[in-house]
Length: 622
Image (cartoon, rainbow, N blue to C red; front, top):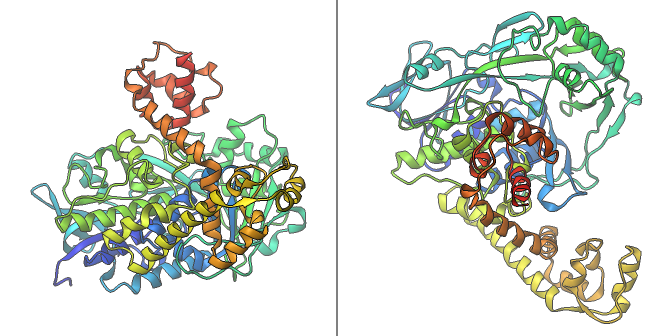
């Protein structure tokens, strides 16, 4: 069946598998993408959205490195938002609602247009290993396929078990079978495995909902893009809606707790701390009388709606009764009930920073097999695994991003050095250099690296260099151009900012928190410059951020130097972390349980963020 060996076999066609296949093929490798179902390539198994807090930064970094997640999202989104605009630029995060069916369709089209990618539909049940190196895979039909490298991106399919109330059955996703054989072989080869749990929400018929009882949640008036390339502008958007649970909903849920696999012992594995099921929320936060529910359409031409915030594994009758107590859901018709799924993963501390396994040469893991959760976290791992698999078989050194270069670098470093005991999700708090790792400058940070790798062409690189040059020129202009009081004071008065009585440099006004550079661009000297240079909005944004936050960035670099000296700073034995309420609840829990001897040891504990370490540093310094 397979006459010729291929360079790289990618097992799994989710977000990690798609990015891995595309990256390896673009770098010249012959790639075989093996999936149990080729109709679900790029499937959004949970909510139909990409991006969000910290995740949006990852999607933009994938794009800057030549990946496709941002491009696919831009072509298929139905709503776009820039989150956290009220905060500083390190917290700005793009998020898009996608058309679920079009998203998967676009990914399939992208992959089919890459000449070096071939496809095969089958279950991979084992690896071919020779002298400590992987040399291919074997399938359920007994087919052996030879390759130089293998990337496993199995998602939630390894020995997956689906739970709905007291019912449980094998499956890797709703209506799809689980994958068997791989876990057992890898364990026999010396790998340490574990079990994790995740879940998803019910899908309902949008025609059965009363939107008048909900609050519309529209997209941005001027929607942006994820990709730095020339993708289509979103001209019309679909609204999402916001509603809330109530004590009546909670009572209906509690009535089924005795049949919940979360509480009756059927589920033993750890679930995602920051995306708990609705029954977990009601149980853990008993003092709250409501929780938000986001009603998200699944596409342009479907009536199916995703009930975000209502992930559950309760019995179907309990789900339906509780749903119908939510405002707007009194007559809700359920398309698909929510469910929980348990699956195998492998401790990521068994990986090199390149995502190659330490136990078997030329074998790479990416995505949920490493203990992560989320499309974005999976996609960036797939991209890096695809790059490094091709570089390894070509005799090139691995490509590894540092924590100061990308959120992707933070994520992978966290996994391979700290490991994880629960599904890992990226947050901005995990990145100690987040002012440097903003979503707006991902292209400036990473596209030159992608060009050197061979993942983007000269036109993409030139666009980035033009942006960098125009930004520097605009900053130089603002630092030397003077603004007279007559031009500046009307704007300053409008924003309740102190007026000036003599000319000042334009950059001094930009540094004022109340004043936006886009508004200063209406003042004649700056307006003339902007028209002459035709500065795009991205350049204006870069210049403003640089001027407003230069001092904070310098302070962040100074703090990074302090953190490197933590190895010598000891924590008193039996230290009571509960009294430091400014620490995150996760940090208090894990620090109290593990009781690290030094701040350096504390900083390596999964879930203890750099901001938590800074709080400890200040407290112990007193």
